[in-house]
Length: 165
Length: 280
Image 1 (cartoon, chains in turn purple, brown):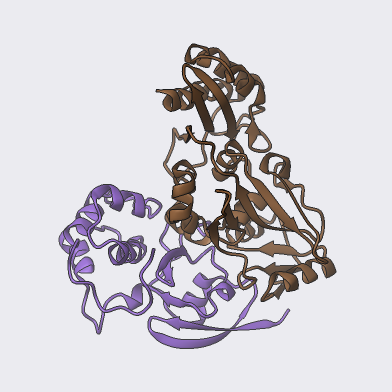
Image 2 (cartoon, rainbow over the protein chains, first blue to last red):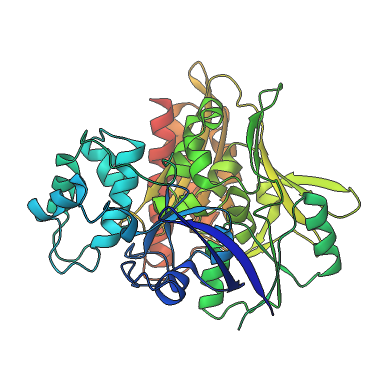
């Protein structure tokens, strides 16, 4: 059926790829690009472990055909820390008990990063609404909300890509 | 098992492709198409992507109506000042769809064309009297009410070669209040057991006009015309009896979210609550 050439700005670096029309962004990231920080979970857009940012907006990469990302900025968990230094949000997840088994953590961090870039001082209700759909079966969410809350107003990391709406 | 993908860069190009390939599936945000393919329910040979066809955008018209282009994301509709100023309840309904990730990817037009009876926007759009606009190659256009567009489960009034290009919501008559309520006994991101959209305008002590539509209780979003008729011209004392009529205007199925009989009863309860919340 032929491949489609796409160009994405991946974690700040321009990448050109040839992808099948039905190839999903999740599989391109984990397969062709070797970025396995983005996890595969339900594969039906429910669980949130495959969350990435496309032009600053959180997406389920398991539902996202890679061709739709042509021309877009894609940011994965590998693009959150800068030069090996964790962001205040990442440190807060450690300090506040924001994870246990860790499988959902990349998606939680990516979603929460987009939240703090769009709304630097979210209320607890803002946090819960935004994070609804990033499932965690270990923490009961208390540590996650605490981690995001404690990161409010922290200086944002310098980031590629645009802020979410 | 891939498919042939077309990426037209204008509406005319998209319509020409759909005229030439009448078996083609249309992809906007792709949430529904990817899931249907995963479930093995569709296996397209050809797909036309609308991403670059220039069909997005929201605007208020001089007559007070609201236009939302087909590929406007649900998130853009939810957060749009134009939508909020037209009807805050409509913006809130877009905000009730699934999760943020889905809202960032899925589109207003795709949501309608998918014709899933459990979706949130269709009942609210019906309650507000919205119409879809449909185009085909050669310039012909037609429009119809959303309730006429939704023919059956996952089935619309679109003919082969036609494309939904947007939805128009007429100006909301002054004094009208609207709301959308979802009964979600399981989780916040689940499909509703029953959902109710209501738009009510009072004239003194009486209900001057009412439009009611329900989701998740039939093959399509359902407009409850007998309930509306019973409300129109009545006082608020009639709301309970009018809401009871809704039980026989819907055709819910037994499933994990409840039995048909239970959903009929919940439809009555949530219709009554929705209408009462607008006349308080």
